[in-house]
Length: 180
Ligand code: IMP
Ligand code: MG
Image (cartoon, rainbow, N blue to C red):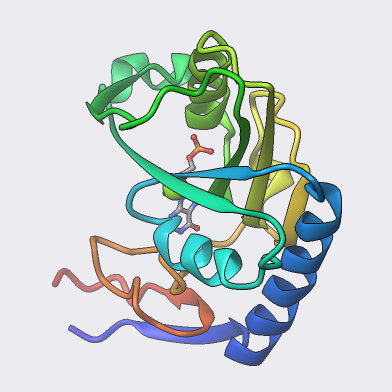
C-alpha cells in the first residue's frame, strides 16, 4: 500500500531553518564545545544536518542513545528502557540534545532527568518540530525548527511503521484506512 503524503514543510525550508539554527547555536556556544546527543533513530537526519551548520570555531562531538518504551501501562510515566546508552560520560560537558519532534514530552522529560544526574555543565534541547498542543510533561525547548499543529508527520527522520524516514521534506500522512 502507498500512503498519501501531503508536503507540509519543503526541503528548502528545512535547510534554511537548519542553517539559521546552526548560526544561532554557533553564537551561543562561542568559546565552548558542543556535545550533541541524538535519540535514535528519528533525530539522526536533523542532527547530522545541523552539526554541519555549526561554525568550525565551535568543536562538535556526537553521541547516541537508543530507547524503547515499556508499553502502554507505563506510558504515562514516560519511563523508557535504555537499549543503547551513551558511549561517553556527560560530566562537565555542554550537552545539546537534538530531537526530531517533541510530542507529549514524556520520553524527553525522563531522559533529561537521567542526563542531569550525570552532571553536565549545561543541557539544552534543540528540536526540528514541536507539537505543543500534545504536551503533558513540561519540557523546555531552547532551539526550535518549526511549531506544528497536532498532525502525524513523516520524513526528515520521522517514520510511520519504520517507513518514510528518508523523505527530504516533512509531510503529513493521510491514512486511507486500508490495512497494509
Ligand atoms: P513523546 O514526546 O515522548 O510523546 O515522544 C516523542 C517521540 O514520538 C518522537 O521523538 C518521535 O519519535 C515520535 N513521534 C511523535 N509524534 C510523531 C509524528 O508525528 N511522526 C512521527 N513520529 C512521532
Ligand atoms: Mg525521537
